[in-house]
Length: 465
Image 1 (spheres, rainbow, N blue to C red):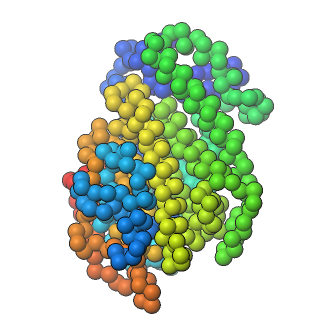
Image 2: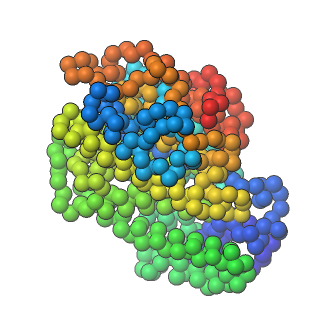
Image 3: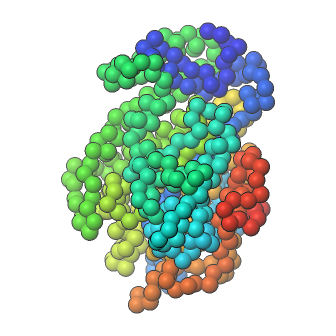
């Protein structure tokens, strides 16, 4: 073992054709050379929630508990039950109101997943032309520094149809990048296989770590006491992820739901969708910790329904996910929709909390400080393509200041759903003062180290973050 070659791209290797990337260790930091070896990486992960969020009117009894946006403003805000699982991370995140893409404000909300990270004028029908997404701009900026330029994931997988994409990542030509939805494939991708029999050996073994333990024992003897603890925690995380990957295989084999049919499958348990989402987050965590990539996207579900993601609401004992946004006028309608969003918040918070609890490998602070997380949806109140619900978390080492609810549209921001008997909000030509979401994207790219003054239809930056 050549200790002087150890850096954040060090691999744990086995004789059976497997190799696992390792995090950086302080033991070998003194032999690392160059600015890149000594500097902590900057990472970006973007998450998309389809079908909007609960926004009951202020005169609705459900408003206090189940309105997605917080009550109050600035640092004096109170999270509703939709977001209160994020309370422990209050000082590590900013909730933003009053941003949207100008080119899509008159679109039906279900047409907007494609442009969430691009800002392109894809329209509601006819000619379709998308553009590059922010994650791919950053991926191109740092692609030579990691094994994989980016990790593109979604619950439904593939690319999907135009304007109802299954992926939120698009290349420079505006073409969709297929999303991976099978955790086993993602897990295997983090391992090198020297020959065609490696995959078969992995399938027959109890754990990929069984093939790597000889090299692990050799490395452990060279590590400091603190690095040994880090190493053991890392190997435990890999093994736990393997177990969850095996469990999630059952979820991927579930029959697809049918439109307007509950399609109740009694074999589905609340743990199926919850473990699946947790496993997808764990894979991103593992990829980030090993510096296999510094860019990831995950689309929780496709817009509308008829996909495996429409079963996600079963995690909280509710029927098909898309239906929740259409049944808010029924008894407990807002509560049901909000309960699902609370589940999504719980898992986002679990992931962010895991990053915060993990020391930055070979650097200062924790992983969340060096990782910028964007969470949001491209519609708010029942198909309305304005006032996107957004959360920006992490990235403190890049200069982001959190702990606030930032309303960028002031009193003229749209709050609350439509009144029965009136046209849906997206048909009403609302006069709101949303700012371009691309302004936030320019700000994010600059803090990530990309030299740019523009993205899509940006008009500047957002200094408040």
